[in-house]
Length: 113
Length: 115
Image: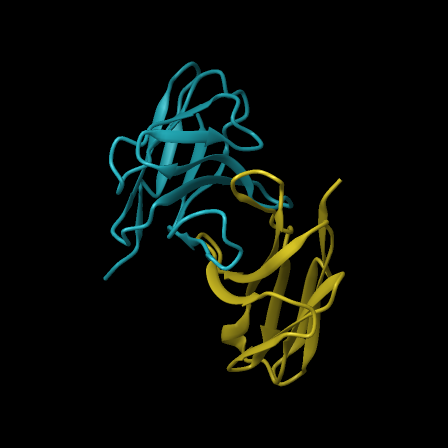
């Protein structure tokens, strides 16, 4: 069964304290992986798309990396405004006309000043 | 500004009542989606549409119905057959399906609660 697991479920950091979020998956035929940020009561906001193992992408204090079995979202020197839930979603070939995408349950990040 | 508009922000359903959630996009996207989000669970796909007048069931379609009469609009009806409708509903769109790189753009969501 195709599965996605994000860890930790929740993470509390002090401002400036760097850390990483993990997204591991068991899917066959991975075509790519999305990272999204979601604020309370709002829709997810796109951050990154990664396509192949070894790929890295950066945006401000965030850097996403991808291996064959997992992806990391590294947060360097976070600020309180980085507090949100971070969702990952691998995309794979389901054998049909469209690719299949499945979202993880997310990591709730709280950055304290 | 281009984007996806969901309405209403909050909706209350009485027992035995059907309710309809609105989703409109002005991004000229072909594909549109409805997801349900429950606390502690990932987003689950209810229905999706790749083109006008065509749509497919997702993973949890029972108790829901949709229509796609216009490219810009993809309303979701939560029927009385959906016994546990309380959730946060998200509409999304993408240029098309079938390509890994086509990211989803999301609306701001509708919180549905049962009275």
